[in-house]
Length: 347
Ligand code: GTQ
Image (cartoon, rainbow, N blue to C red; front, side, top):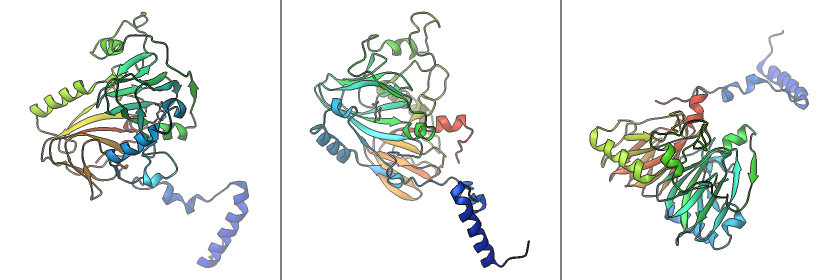
């Protein structure tokens, strides 16, 4: 090869690229550093949603379209850096769902895994494979991959919860299947039946009729009253972790791991006046403020935190959480998936 001048080399390469392009062939050396980065990079941004204004738009939508007609009446919390993707992080989705008194969101199932975290209202339900979980504020309810679910509200007030799903993950793998039953699933068990069988370090004998729930994902209701008590006891008995505060992860009793294959969820308590050390992690995370106030510094930018506010922190952003009054947070991320793939890191 002649030693080319930079200009003639560029011209020769561009001519080569132009010839290859119709055959869908491209030079790696032009893009390698953008593909294999030394540190995580994402277009996702940190963003805080004020609950009161989201709620107002959701209630207005409630006056215009029924849950039945919408199938799911939800306002999507889309990351402003991921416009057009309906994603809150690269791998996860978030939305606020409204069910008005007397309404039913019809029964369906899909390969996407979902969690519900109750924002307000009391007494509406999610039925999973025909068993109701009666929902109270800050309860966590799961609808795992391919389990039938419908939602209904027999109470006298509107019910709003946060939906967290792995929609972008399932889209990435092109593995979405969905089926519609419509209406409500026929009742299969009394409300609370599964929690009594699987939620207390017990399980029915495998293979017996009593073991009617899917073996890998039996439990689907984690009540606020229970997790809040545990977090409170923990906070009274030891010093907070410097990076996390007091933190407890929700787990799947079948294997002791994260609640679902693609989604991890946890709660934290930061004592009044406590500030975490700066921390980064590869799992972009969605937070809900349950109680208290304070602020989150994400890569040095402050986002104020008040009850029911929602915050997304992108992968590898530096996060400092500062509690004003005692701060209680719920959070979910794709850590469950990243750990299986050997990708999760924190610093
Ligand atoms: O309740 O099943 O926010 O299927 C998005 C997709 C909720 C649901 C969402 C869904 C659901």
